[in-house]
Length: 437
Image (cartoon, rainbow, N blue to C red; front, top):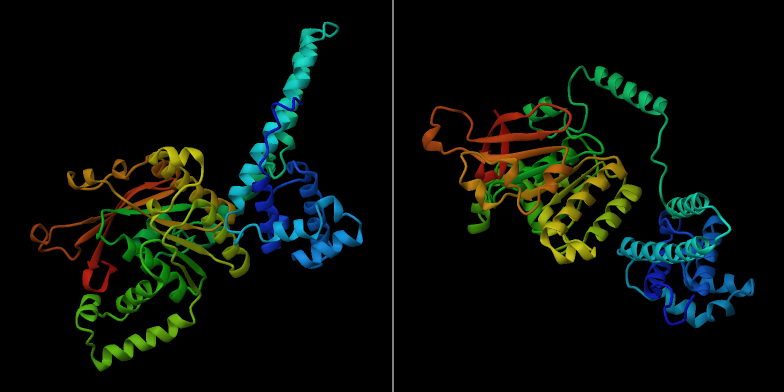
């Protein structure tokens, strides 16, 4: 190609991907790339060596990698041992490997597109071929380019596969006799209306600030980890792990969190109850990632790792709008960023085949209505579109509802595969806990 117009590439992204693989060897088979994605021949050689080492079950640290290349007389092609050391220390963490891979894929696709366009230009200028043949050849090149991008999954299934999956689901539902098919939330009527938290689905709990969305999310997380003995990962973007655990302890021990915080005094019986729950919580399979600033790329990476290494069965995100996106569009407009975050959460639920519960904030317009609505989801309608379930928290004025046993309503405003409706609950603010009525 013309030296004045060099081919698109990002050598930094190439180094980032390779370094991520060296830092986290499990990514060698997980990152969907191919040798030709690397523009620099030296990087292609390093990637091939990493794949070969991984396939043979040998270590892939940069010392082992350097020796492997040296033994096969490939080290000089890569720039020597110093070049390998430079790659192996290029980034401090493999958390952003998704971002580097995205850049790598984009640059490779652009190079392929330029080459295909160059070939099409030559064929279009050739008078010897029929124009229909030239068009057909051009179409084949474009379709070949789409299919040649490694890492794309075959999303086309024979009808038989879908039929078998549907029959399995129906039989599983029959076994549960209409009960909770998914993971229980601990709120009986919610489970009855929705069949619980279903694998591959995204559930959104939305409310205005200080209305209990974190309390409800952590209550579900604690119920699943402590009562159901399942592994739960919580991404807490607003509170520290210590504060979340303190809230769980007080909630389950019927201890006034505000009193503990203000005076620090508790009775002997309360102390005994807290210690008992603390012992149980200490052995529970509850994991908390309290990153104050989490990107979509980091969320993907950590969720995948937790599923792979710990067998996570539920992810809770508190809360959605605090996460930040990584794409160029996301950096330009807040609505695009929230759309990227929402879509990422849904994609992770599908990819890992586990439920994800995400808290979200409602806009100020919700305060003007008698009850919150789906349209009040702050900043982006994509949340409503991506979510399989949306539960809105609505508190009732006690002066207007003196005879009722409930003081709050969970509005199931959306359920992709079931009915919507309202669930009466009691909110005990001092214990930050929702109770069945």
